[in-house]
Image 1 (cartoon, rainbow, N blue to C red):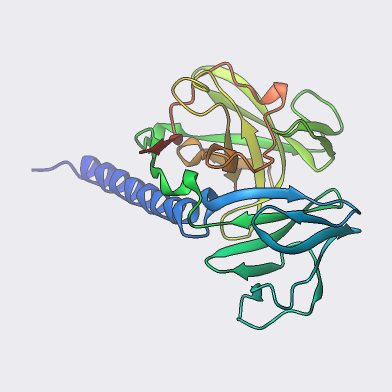
Image 2 (cartoon, helix red, strand yellow):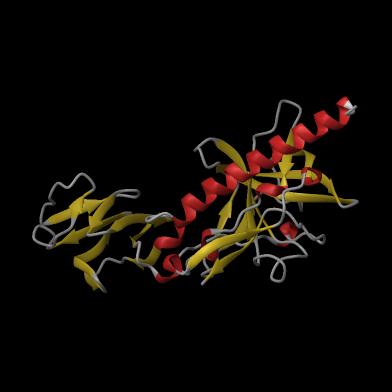
Length: 274
């Protein structure tokens, strides 16, 4: 006779693994889709002077935080619905144009606009065959306690260095305390959103596996804490930053307090390319 407790535990493990596999499948679509994360082929920062951009029709300049293109009426560029453009077009952050199979997307950082090229033919995308990951393990799901208004090191704000050297500050910070592999640890969180656009805690971290068993740093999105500050931390959902798939992103790197002394052998590991 099968022990009921053993059966229940097996069912919970099966459900956990199935949910993780569904998350993995969604991640693959988000990364490897025709206009997914790995398809970013260029990021062109704009200034006040009008310039031509390699491979992009028209001439482009910044106007405040917007991108302005001229000479677009006969350029072949269209809106996503196929409608034509005026000869001069002002585009704000998030607006998208179609250039054949590629997309042109306006991106801003601290009021400075850039024009991004998202191309299904980008080499990093066409060579991508998978994302390696550690096997899912429920033991990597732990409880933590979050407190607002300060970093893990006690500062009021967090200075963030991005992969291109740009530095910025965030004041929407909190400190997350938890135990992992017998260590009492803390991480700094910032405000963020999850894959469904819901408010979440955002974590950028490195650990003792980084640069060897896994990419040099990873991201994690956590549900908002409950009324007591409790948060569930599922390290199996740690994922690679966009800059693991394209050199044209400006990902934030982990702050010193978010470089963990333990190896987190859970979540995504590395891009796999042909």
